[in-house]
View (cartoon, rainbow, N blue to C red):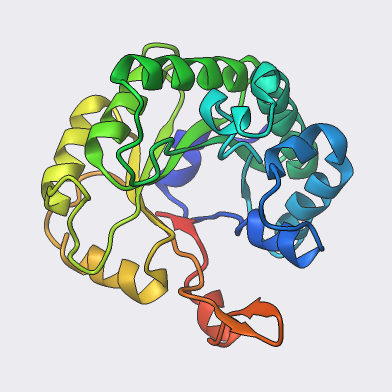
Amino acid sequence: MKPDLRSAWKNNVLVGDGAMGTFLYQKGFPVGISYEELNLTSPEVIEDVHRSYIEAGAVLLESNTYSANYDKLSKFGLEAKVEEINRAGIRIARHAAGEFGYVVGAVGSIRAGKRANLSSSELKRFYTQQFSALLEEQPDGIMLETFYDVEELHLALRAVRKLSGLPVICQLAVDETARTLDGLTLPEAFQILEQDGADIIGFNCRTGPNGIKRALKSLQGSLTLPASVYPNAGIADYVDGQYRYGASPEYFGQMAPVFA
């Protein structure tokens, strides 16, 4: 029997998976559709992506539920399928992860760095609905990722903490200033999230491996919780009708997403 997620990361570096959307785009699924709907319409495709990451050495998978909240899904007429899509996302990832892999329910920022016309009560309702559906399938933890401001991440973290004591990983997306969008320094942001009950705090996306390295450097001496490092491949170039990343695979292999 595998140890629970908190026990697993105490003495080991856990290697996470890579991007879902980029992989699906490479498989021919166009930008502008709901990739989360594929949990229902093409579950075998989603499982194939998950399995590819497991075969590459990942031990932790994120469910394909990043934008599976009421607000985002309503843009595709899928608002009535929030629960169905989220539950399917966990089941698919669990099947791919096998006996020894871990699955976290992925939940992304709804505002996505924009001051959308959504009240705090609406955000709480949308997050609570998504968390409730994910938790019904008993994931190993929850990942809150690509949050630009602490205000929204604080709200989401408190919402999930009212529902569950499972491990929660919080990931910020910061720019070159190493500050959150609402102006907090990274030590200030980490302190707030730790007080709110985060188990792991770190970074994903936005500025690629080098940007995340610089963000971590600014935290030297301030880290009291395990850190997550989950970079994207930086900024893509548009070459011959396709988006391509210029750095070598070996470089990004050194910056595999980890929880340490």
